[in-house]
Image (cartoon, rainbow, N blue to C red; front, side):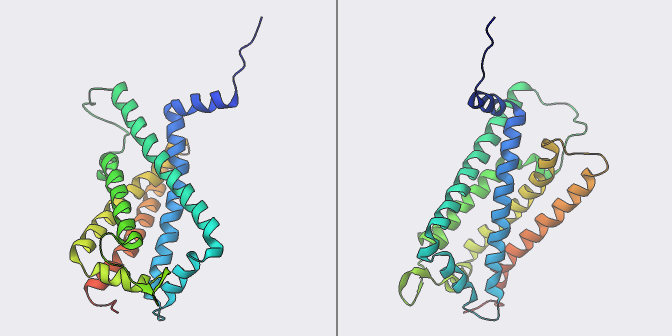
Length: 236
């Protein structure tokens, strides 16, 4: 009697096809993207340094040719994480919708917060903002960018950020996206533990509270920059 041999690749595919597999992919990619959000915020907050050129030196370090391989490796990982996160979330949403085409009259023990209900569209809006943000401060397709000393490999980040956020439409879109990101991070962070089977009646409320605090702090940090520019606290 012969036994069917299942290869590791087949097991991985079968695991991903199940809802738990997609949740696991969303959790792992979510951790990667969360780490990037925190690192990006810490880099951006250097604009408040007493040395006006601090954030430009940070940008010059990132764009140093000696760091090109590491920078592109990080970009590749982030891009893959974004794609996998979006694809798995859409597939999971479709699976849930087909499994239950009619809505429950009353849902018990299911997150009914605004963040949870808007998760399916807050993610795409944040993704659209990321594309806009790259076009704005990296490509220069939204507003003209300036380089330090005419060196195209060394962007004048301080100048570009301040002049960019002096445009109220740009600042308004940025703040809106950060509020949606805050909601997305809040729900995604604590539900990640639940998806991986780490939820408990005693700890889940604490996880929710901790996720809310972290998400709000990130939103405050990001929103503070355009607000500081528009109010004149940050100027050239």
